Length: 630
Ligand SMILES: Cc1ncc(C[n+]2csc(CCOP(=O)(O)OP(=O)(O)O)c2C)c(N)n1
Image (cartoon, rainbow, N blue to C red):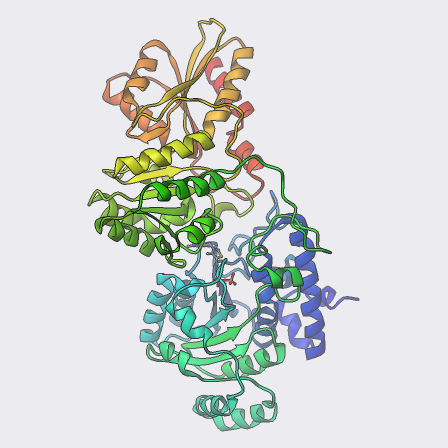
């Protein structure tokens, strides 16, 4: 019988011996590797935190009725062991699948998921909130924030540390340091912390821990004496890196080996008796226990399906992605323009800047998980005479909203935002969909908002944006950039293009205004409509702002049925823009606005989700047919 079979809740771990826990760690790892090899997911980070999860569950009480101890996992991509050990083992095979469990902790999924996550650097703030809520309700449960060294590059982490230290909050922060973000971590703090490896200077550490433990009122001496008998072999150090945290009121413990169960359990047993705020610095190995992931943690950070025996990652044959087109184009632009430089917030490979970084290292900046800083840094570079391009996922640009308004657009600075993963991203789900950017960018004065229908258009838009010398945002989706058609139409600023006109003559005329990823689906929908006897025109808007008012009014003057299609929330997007134009022109007209409804979209494959929200060609055509029938 597997040990895992005996575990239904975290407190079941209290009964296990160290040997059984070590065996359990192996079983949990095997299940993680097996499942992620089939479903894809965040493998390396989750393998690194298995012992940490087991040690927390075996020492603390996550099952205390009405007042359990609670963990907030930062990003939440490292919480697979947590999911398996908190009653979701049987559903674990559905990880990240449509109707299956989420790849991230979600309050709606389990009461053990204390706080929903997906974006980085929120854990300390959220854990502090939980902690204060416990205090105000006279509860005794402990709250943990577990964050990586990558998440510690995000400003919100420091804002929360600063506040927690000031409040003397009873919070335990576990800094899970593996020296990796997705790529190698960056920044001065990470650099400083990494200089302090687990080392044999634990005599001093012992002394300092003794001071902390003995200071526990009433039981300190006894606690220390008991602990002392099991302390041999402990690698616990209270070393200078802790000074960063001690200055702001945290007790710093570490670095300790976060993949060594006995060390972790020993430290947690002692810490249990201490009041916070405490920061425990653990070193873990990303990909621990699965050698392909240990060897290339970046490739196994967020990975698709792979062969678990060999570690060979299966790649779907696919035409060039938008990311690849961006990657090539930005290198060409930088070759032609010496002022072009590129910024990423901890995602050099995801956004396609790895080759740029090699070719133009002095013009490349990885700022860490610091999107707000990235936007203002770009504004500063632009104010100083450079032409920065910030390559960023749509969902993470949400972090920089005020900076876009206050630092870039208000000063009308030439910053280009290349916004990848715009629209539905698939298995990462609600926290990661990029479905708001058209709306939140369109409302900002001076901002230009573009969306290409294919790779070639993206290339032209990037060159046009460089010539424009203004704030420009170009958004494009995940995946292939080749849709099998090609238009040679050059980009005219603020102008759309007609990409499809039915050959059939019909009284039933329809104009479909589509943007970005939805141009292709609208053309396919138009073909379906044509087969139903309709005559459809599809307009590739290209620009949401400045929008092609002339084209909209011209179509509206001759065609009764107007439709807009966008892979963005309906509120404030293309449909709203077209409606506003018609209203301003006193043309009262019903527009069928097709886009993402006012709700958060779940996880699943991109195709399943497009179908769910009604953005496949068939569903678009069906909506239009239903509308015309009524
Ligand atoms: C705000 C934000 N920006 C970017 C990301 C993408 N991202 C997911 S995990 C990750 C690296 C996290 O590194 P770390 O916190 O050290 O955790 P590790 O994976 O090393 O355990 C990044 C950049 C994100 N989730 N949130």
